[in-house]
Length: 318
Image (tube, rainbow, N blue to C red; front, side):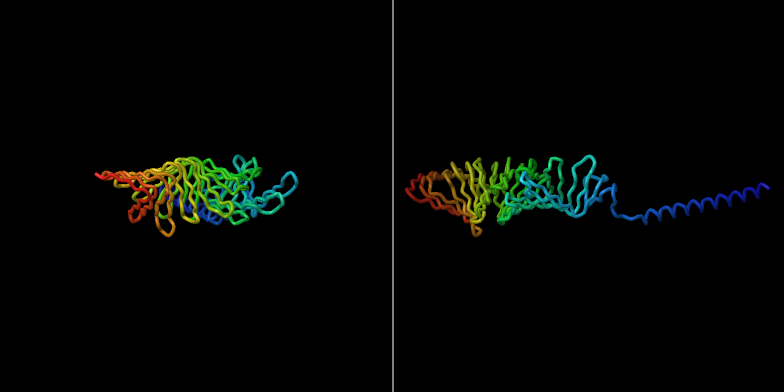
């Protein structure tokens, strides 16, 4: 009798185990067959919101928003592939494009990026690489953590690190301000210009002027120019990116790797055609361990390390 009871209990337990196992298998199959597409109140994918896994309240595909001024003239057009509205944070725009218009209704500037936030105050905050293009062909490319467009003034501002992508250089600053109506941009704070040719310039508050079809980088602050064999200190600079010629203003001091010092004023640095020539018609004072020379004109080939001094040359040699 005890043997028969034990036998029946074993059979019953075995059947229960099989039923439980089949139930888990069926449940797993149901989970795996659930649709992966996003619906209302679901969580964004990593690709769309890598820094914030949270649900949204509303999603709009092919989002378009028109904004009008006091005269009921179109002033801004905000477009995006997708728009996500959240409860406690700004709306998210995927592949946004903002177009500004002048008082006559003609398009003025277009800003585009991969991501942006539409803020409650009407400003649009761009993230990552931002392309800025004007109707007259002026283009700016930059990377930043945040770039704000004020829909009241059309001014662009950033209070975070900005990397401006020029044609022959990358410019890194601590912020930026652009008045789009003037076609002038100011990269604020400490500024570092890394040229593709290897030279580097350090300055503050750099203005990028592309008005009247020009491309000038200008600063009225102390500037340091660094090349392979020389370090140059000046009181300001103006770089013509089209001609690849830089003017270093005010008192200029050139420190050579050899220890020699050249003092002058208003130095021209010609980098066109792969060259690096220092030229000035100002007073020259050349000092080395073996010589002390004064002249009125200097032509210095920094690549070949050859200096030509002329115009009333007076020297003392030891």
